[in-house]
Every structure is written in C-alpha cells, then in structure tokens.
Image (cartoon, rainbow, N blue to C red; front, side):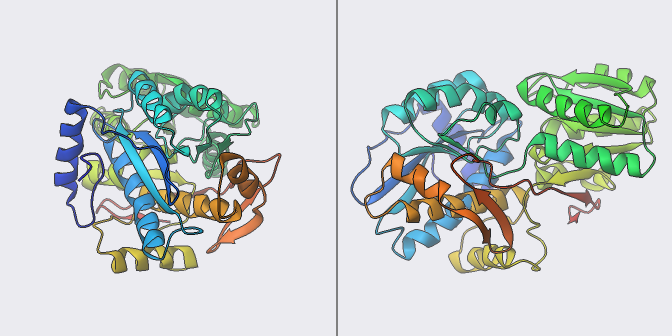
Length: 384
C-alpha cells in the first residue's frame, strides 16, 4: 500500500497516522505515465493546522475516481492521484511539486491553499503541466490568464462581495477583517476592501495571525477595541475557531463571517456549540440537501463505495473537481496528451454537472462563480 494514499474503508485516525508517518520517511517512488493510467500529482496539507482541508478534498476526489475506474476509467484509462504532504507550507510544496513534476505526472491537481499554489504554479507553467482545481480563490492565480491553469471555484472577490452585500443589507456597516498574514490573507483582505469601497466604506480595523498558528490574542485586542458589527475572517479553521472563542471571551457580541477556505465542517467540529451563528460563504452546492442531482450522486457514491468519506463542502469540492477533470479528459480522446486535455477542457463550454453550472472556453478557465452563504448551527451541522 502507498503510505500516502488512503485506501477504501480506512478510518480518519488511521489515515492521519499514515500521512504523518509518511511525512517522516519521505515521498513514495512515483511512476511515470503508462498507457492505461493517468496520474495526477497533489501536494496538500495532510497534517498540521489545515490538515482536514487536504484530507477531505482528497477523499472526495478519490471517491469519484475510484467509482470511475471501477467502470473502466476514461477512454480505457484509470485516473489515480499521487499525493504528498506539504503541511500548508510553501517551501515543502515546492519540494513536493518538483518531485511530482520529475515523475512526469499528467497534471497537478487539488493543491490546497493560496501560498502553496502561488509557489507551485510557476513550476507547473515552466514544465508545461496543467494546474487543475486548486482549493483557493486568490485572484493572483487567475490573473494574468494562464492557459495551463483551470479553476473550479469562484474567487475570493466573489465570496467577499457576497459577504459584504449581506452585511450591508443587514445594516452592519462597521466591518473588521481578521486575516492570515500571507498571500491567502491578503487576497481575502483585498476582496473585502474592494467590496466595502464599492459602498464607500472601509474596514474599521484589521489584524493578522501567522499561518499554522493560533496566537490570536493581539488580533482580538485590536479588533475588539474598534467595536465592529461583524468580523470577516480569512484564515484556516483552527485559527478562526481560536479567534472566535477568544473574541467572545473578551466580550465581543458581533457576528463572524468566513470564506469557504476555512473548511466549514472542520470549523464546525472545532467550535462545537460555540459555532452557533457563525456564517461561511460556499462555492459548491450543499452536500446536506438532495435538491440537486450532483448531491444525490455524491451521497449515493459514498453509500455504494464503502468509503469512509465524510459528506461536507470540502469533500464535495474534491468530488466535483474530479468530475470536471474526467469530463475534460473524456473530450481529449483515447490517447490524451496535455495539449488535447487543455483543448478538451476548453471545449466543455456551458454545461451542468448535476445542477452545478460550469462554463469554460479558450479565454475563460474559471468554471464557476457560484457563491452562497451558510450558517453553523452549534451542533456540528451547517444550514444553507
């Protein structure tokens, strides 16, 4: 068994232990492409403060590919993911990416986070390797246009515009921003400022937290002193949860809004009853309601596959990313190359993935601008 690849039926605790151990012994030997295999390379956080994002996205993608492979793959080719743990750190991501590119993977897939993706995209571009469905909405990965990069999700600008519109519609105009002190945090801050500026507003306070840290005391003091109506949070789930708890302990009674990268279920699990009323923007359909065919397909596949996949927004995004990749690969023909895959993706045009609308073309590689708001209920559940 590949120590970096969870097998069907494995428990989350067992999987966490495996990836932690694999991070110590180094990467597995990665094989080059063969005639009946398409190997995707994924560097993501599988340990550390953002681990659930990588674990859940990968689980959803693997769920789809496992079902696809059981049905014969795409044009007779199996699709597999070679995964490496970067702990949500750019330097480790660069090392992993070089290993993956050296193994001649077909594409890079499902990278988790802005700072890691920003470090990896130039390497993929130099190697002329597609960079597919990074789990980030940063504009720096979308502009300028890169023919090798394909995005499933809406941007952070789309998410923060929705959040600010909701806040101002509710008369909550005093908005503060708590953000990670890196490219991800700046991307979310920039989007929030842009949306506020369009309403002749600006943040009443901003404060930061370091990546992979929960040291939020200074940020709580700075923002609470400004008495905002709401705090927009641009960080990962552990630091956002730490901030919410500390702010409430300091007497703050306002509301908290997060962008999707926070990891909704991970945040709900981290906060427990303290999560009641916390709002999160979403860029994929809810996995908790069967109103869309894609959700029914997702839940049915979990039931049929015997995989211990948790239905949540992160695993749903991985499932959708895999489904979109397979559609592009199908259109690439029986002997797919990177060039024919890019052409296949661009030929998708406007279509529906089970009720999730996507649109791609030679000049547009951002499949969706879908965004909606959800709320944590305080009992580990999410209401949309």
